[in-house]
Amino acid sequence: MGDSKLAGQFFDAAIGLLQRVRDEEAGAVEAAGTLIADTVADGGRLFAFGAGHSSLAAQDLVYRAGGLALMNLLAVPGAVGVDVVPATLGSALERVDGLASAVLDTSPARSGDVLVIVSLSGRNALPVEMAMHARDLGLKVIGVTSVAYASETKSRHTSGTYLKDHCDVVLDSKVATGDAELTLDSVPAPFAPASTVVTSALLQAVMATAAGTLADRGIEPPLLRSGNVDGGHEWNGRVFEEYGDRIFYRR
Image (cartoon, rainbow, N blue to C red; front, side):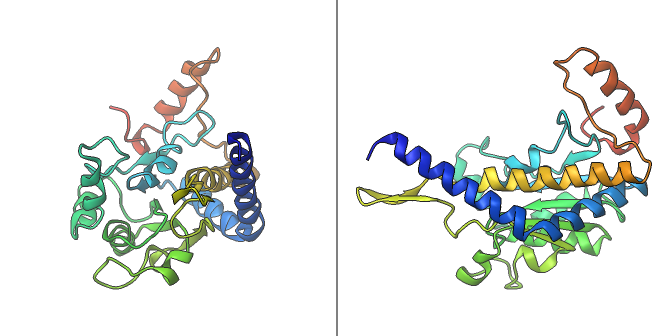
């Protein structure tokens, strides 16, 4: 089997998942986009969190050309991507009780804000506790997860629950347990994960819905432009000035 055939199989698998979430999660995407639009219109702030590779989709929303300027990354030290060494420490931190609450309590997040939590498995202490504590503080929670994990794995949170159990809106990525789309008889482990592709697409669909919903209400969405196009920096400067009290990745 040639490499090109495997490449085509991966694209087919990713496209299949994208088609599924487009069709099956349309209502949830609409609900999440409306919730974000409501929050922007009401003066609230937006935050996104993910641990490990789930952080990639959260970071994709922050300080992004074509994205809402109000989306802030809620960073958990040692759990943002794979920049911690050894990388296995990041996985260990996802299982630490109390860490999520400490991060939330020292963050700018407050009642009336929205927190997007990305966790493929939704089973670790960090995302579950993050969602539970956020709701206790009066935040609305949008969870992006693979619901299949809840029936095929055991929760690692003391409550025995999963991220999906503590959300105002759940976006199901439909990604199979194990996050690898391809197998070969000659390869002992499954390979080619598609969760980042699907999760990022789901969230960008949500943000597009939010921007359109705001526009329908006569509110200009606070969007950023690319700094690599003429006038981009000037545009962004105006947005940063107007919404500076709701943007926390700038000094």
